[in-house]
Image 1 (cartoon, one colour):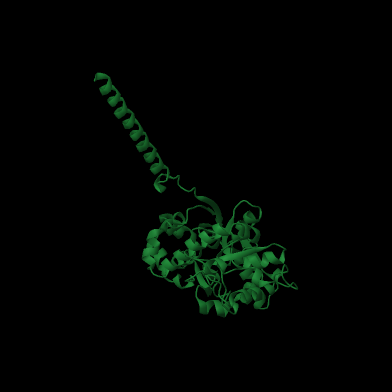
Image 2 (cartoon, helix red, strand yellow):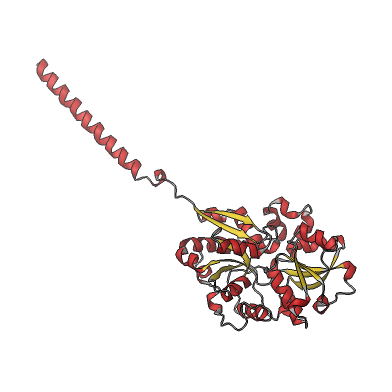
Length: 351
């Protein structure tokens, strides 16, 4: 009887062990298939150089980061600041960064130099640039025809402000060698150059424009912050700030480019549904240059420059080509394929 009891107890214990083993196996299986336990997808690193992060024309990248839209796309985006767009372009061509936020016109100029780059998201459809003249010389410089022999401020030699300055000079009867563009950057360096008389006139953007107007050191000569002002100065719609990159990189990283387009288009849509005060509140305080009210006012007057969907305006590329053809020896006499300088592929597929 005792032996039978021992045998029965042993059987019960054995069954218990088997049962507990099966339970452990099922638990392990449950853990391994639980999505929450899977390792998080590593963020894709992307480096973008911006031709002046604190310029209102280039606020889209910073605002996108502040809104968390890069994170939503699982992107780790490093935004690098370079006051002159031409230097950002050089960094991209050298492989130091993946992409650039600068003016679309660089893509046409680069094609003339045998380089293949393309715009993938269009931020602005007007330059947002203003030609300012020193208040001391406002009675002498009344149009670009008076630029002859004058020192003209641009962000950098070969930059978009340089292109536009040469175009306006040539359009008004001067030759390229009759004007003297001087690289003075933007913001504080541009303001100092104007105040010290190092430049007689110069092209810059907001909030630098409003700062010089408020101080009384400069007056507006040509205003390209609006569609009407741009068409009067340049003959049509002039797409400006955009995201562009080398074509080979875009083709080999289409998934990454699509994620960038998703984030940027969402930001453009956000801009068109929020006020200047709400947008400014998202920007880093140092972008205000010590005067938030002035920054908000400048931003309010600039909101119409942003595209609602990131698409290239249909008449934009031809206007830019017409402008550059007036003076740019890199493209004069060459067959420029405008269709290769931009694509709406990614913005058309945003989600």
